[in-house]
Each structure stands twice: as structure tokens, then as C-alpha cells.
Length: 300
Ligand code: HXC
Ligand code: NAP
Image 1 (cartoon, rainbow, N blue to C red):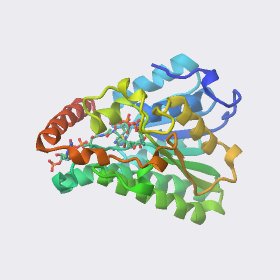
Image 2 (tube, protein in one colour):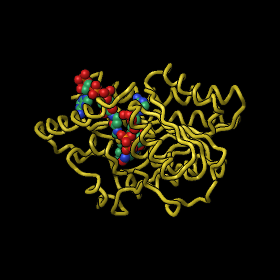
Image 3 (spheres, rainbow, N blue to C red):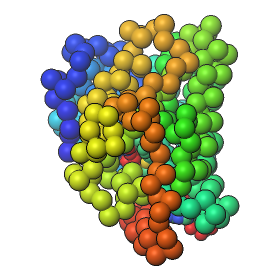
Image 4 (cartoon, helix red, strand yellow):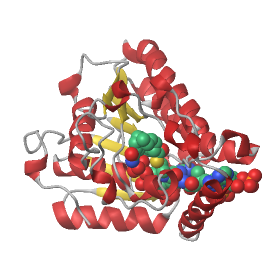
């Protein structure tokens, strides 16, 4: 289902006309709502994910609701050759003007319970995959002298750590440094890199793996956050549009928190320290169920 109407957005109609944006993991959750906002504001949008049917269905839902052009592409960003092929397809219609590194994998686990494959399952998507997409786009922009904006979706864990989500926190911290480094290296050639560090925004994908057993609806109120609530999708979408658009052209190398002030009040999953073996077993089984359901839909 489409989520937004124009009154959710703080920008004028047509703001992003002429822009061409790729959002990795844009078939679901936060990626989907950012795709929707860009489409509503006139951008041509590409979304990718491993579940071909999901990205195609999302592209259809969004264009049925808002018109415009949104293309769903099946791509596994863990595979550099697959990224290259996808970007050849995108560039055949013209260069991108913006990239959102949004695709991710995550699950809660005691770090001592992780296998090397468990670590790689996350790091290969978040750390390596996001870098490969940025690098392949960057080479194309630099070769042709195109200007562009890259926005990476991180977490506030890049500042205070992420207990029980260590591979994700480490990988996101790496992307934070990528953002700062390339902002300097590529800035003088018209390529800006910024990042967003969201606090909790209840999505099906994140909740199945980070708060198994709690519904996204239940998660809306949160007394541990200074604003007493989790984030709303339109709030994230507005910040992403701001950073993608040339209206923010002097903002470069920044990571902006959007978390109701949560990280200043000491966030992270330190609460999980009280769990025993039984709770972890139960969580692992619930997460496995979500992973198996998604894997059955993958087409690449
Ligand atoms: C310990 C686990 C585990 C768990 C999987 N593994 N789940 N280990 N605890 N709960 C281990 C497996 O045992 C296996 O290692 C290895 O990880 C690979 O598992 P697969 O299921 O084969 O992985 P794969 O099919 O590649 O799936 C990747 C995935 C999955 C990351 C595990 O969750 C996924 O596809 N996620 C995509 C969507 C997602 O995660 N969205 C949430 C993003 S939210 P062994 O050694 O046993 O073979 C987010 C929020 C951040 O990032 C901030 C919130 C505030
Ligand atoms: P989500 O709905 O599970 O989104 C993750 C997306 O990434 C999925 O569409 C998934 O699609 C895609 N993806 C995963 N691996 C991929 C791969 N190898 N290649 C291509 N696509 C891949 O979760 P979300 O909550 O919207 O998360 C979106 C982003 O926000 C993530 O970066 C997450 O870390 C970040 N974030 C979320 C929260 C939150 O509270 N929700 C907080 C902070 C940060 P496929 O499975 O089809 O590939």
C-alpha cells in the first residue's frame, strides 16, 4: 500500500523533477517510503532488492497511487557483478542524480553466539554491499563529470555502539566513515555524501528481527525516547528528500540523527542483557521463521 499524501511532505510539487534516484532495499519499509516521496515530488525512481516480486509489486503500488516512473529491479548487492549489471540497465536511460544506501540485514544475537557466516550475512550486505554500490555509481559519475548526492541510512549505534547487534553496528560505523571520507575525496567533483541515523521506525522487516514478538503497532509509543514515541515514516522521508535535493547543496559529510533525541538519552539494546538462554532460543526461532519466509520469495 502507498503510505503518503502531499500533505505529509514539506516540499513543493515537482521539486525533484529531472532527478533520477536509486534506493537499495526500496521494496519495503523505510526504502519504500523514501521511494514514494521521491516519486511524488517528480523524480524517476529505481528500487532494488533480492525479492524480485516484492520490488515489482512496490513499484506498481507506488505508480498506481501517484503516477510517474518507478522501476523495480531484482539485485543482490552482495554481488558486485550484479550491481554493475543493474547500474548498466539504469544508466541506459541516463545517469542517476542520487543514491540511497538503504538495503540492510540485521538480527539480535548474543555476539558469542554468532558464527562467521552469521557475521558475514550482515556485513556482506551493509558494509561491503553498500560500498560496492557507492563505488560503482561513483566511478560512473566521476568519469562523466556528473553531480550527485549519496545518502546512506545508518543507525545512531554509530555513535554509542550496538550491543547484541554488533555486526550491524560495526558495518554502519564503517559506512559512517565512508561518508566522511568520500565527502572530502569526491566533494570537489560535485558528489556529496551524507547519512541519516534513524532511531526506531517500526517496520515489519526490522521488528521481525530486532523485537520478535512485538507488533509494529505496539511499538509506536516508547517512553524511553524523549518524545515518547518512535518515528513516523513521513518524517524520515522528508529528511531523505532534503539531503538528496540540490537544496541542501552545502551539506556534505554529515550524519544526521532522526530519533526524537533517543541516542542522547542512551539508546541501544542494553536491555537485552537480562535475557537468559530460553529467551535467546525463542528469539532465534522467531527470527529464523521471518528469514525463511523472505528467502522463499527471493528470485535472485
Ligand atoms: C544468530 C543467526 C540468526 C540469529 C541468522 N543467523 N539469524 N545467528 N542469531 N537470530 C545466522 C545463521 O545461523 C547463518 O549462520 C547465517 O546467519 C546466515 O543465515 P541465513 O538465514 O542463511 O542468511 P540469509 O538468508 O543470507 O539472510 C540474511 C539475514 C536476514 C541478514 C540473516 O535477516 C535478511 O535477509 N535480512 C534482510 C532484512 C532485514 O534484516 N531487515 C532489518 C533491517 S533493520 P550459520 O553459521 O548457522 O550457517 C535494521 C535496524 C537497525 O538494520 C536499527 C534499529 C534501531
Ligand atoms: P526492511 O524493510 O527489512 O528493509 C531492508 C531492505 O533491504 C529489504 O527490502 C531487503 O529486500 C533489502 N535487502 C537486504 N539485503 C539485500 C541485498 N543483499 N541486496 C539487495 N537488497 C537487500 O527494514 P527497514 O526497517 O526498512 O530498514 C531500512 C534501512 O533503515 C536499513 O538500512 C536499516 O538498517 C535502517 N534502519 C532502520 C531502523 C528501523 O527502526 N526500522 C532504524 C535505524 C536504521 P530483500 O530481502 O528483498 O533483498
